[in-house]
Amino acid sequence: QVQLVESGGTLVQPGGSLRLSCTTSGFIFGQFVMRWYRQAPGKDRELVARIDETGSRRTYADSVKGRFTVSRDSGKKSVYLQMNSLQFEDSAVYYCNALRMGWGTEFWGQGTQVTVSS
Image (cartoon, rainbow, N blue to C red; front, side, top):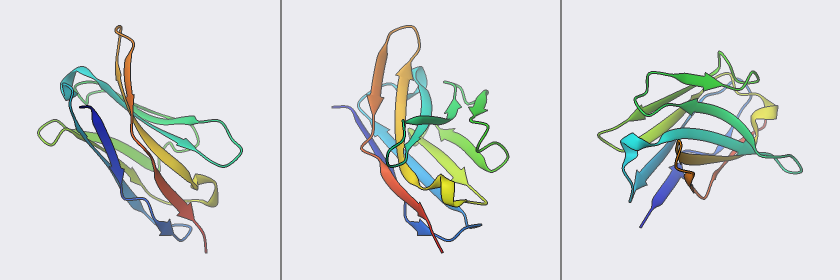
């Protein structure tokens, strides 16, 4: 059974930091690109960060470059999103996604809410 379980979302003040985690099971973690998406109310789901299968290549949305860092731990089958200098506009539900390139196999987590508010 495939599972992607996000955690770490909470209420945080502007300028603060959070670390999201996504723990996975049920598939071969090392074969999948891992991505973080977010979706704010009334907006489309947005790709925030991506890390390749080996962790050697990372890409970010322009809106989070320099503030967010994506990482993965193969031993723990987990992916992380370190979010610094949080802004109001970062408020959203954050989703973990696993994609096997070339196979069309894709899995989603249930999401974790991040709210940036003073």
